[in-house]
Length: 284
Image (cartoon, rainbow, N blue to C red):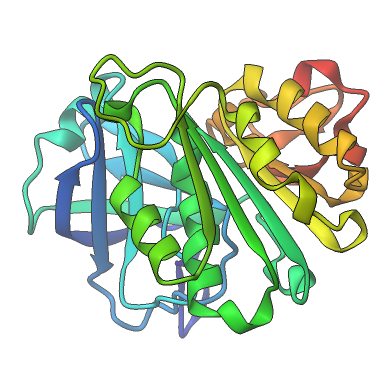
């Protein structure tokens, strides 16, 4: 989605985009698909894990992780949870209505550096939104990667994002997926029950530490325990990548909302290696 026209960099200029499609993912989270009105905008030069700023005239603006990959250039997608006045207004829009977008911001996943490696992608809750961009990138360039394991946790079956898409990717052999919910009150959940770390025994015997990169996104409590499991598997600290997009606000280092331990998450991240941030306890 890099909002760049043929005339040059316009990353600080909003661009109108039309809603092509929307659907509810959960009770409070919705999928949005947009297309820029200016067809000269090039949408290829962003990375999975980057984010954009969406604005509505007369309402305000907010930061959202991009959930579509740069390999798909005709549109841009987001997953949005309704939490506040901006998202309340966004959820009232209809297909064909306009929003304004600018970006991309932050530093995402360098997918080219992961070519030829095994991947363990671990998602919890809303972490599936930015990691969907990684998964779809892998799908579009599957020959560039070796084993790809996806471990996904949610509070309940009703809270799991993109479940059907993940299952379909697994059935086509794109990824090996393992899905878990903290608790199933329906009695109909066909997969694992327990926190996401209880999925690790399903892949442990096939992990080759020196050729594996782990990618993590989820709620704060998840990072500590997932990283412990990855270190048990002897994954190198500089090959444990995490995205900390929950701290984003202005996206440009002006507001200071994301500044921790002398690091500006929105400028240096949201993607960090565990090696880089292991001593900044507040960050993870």
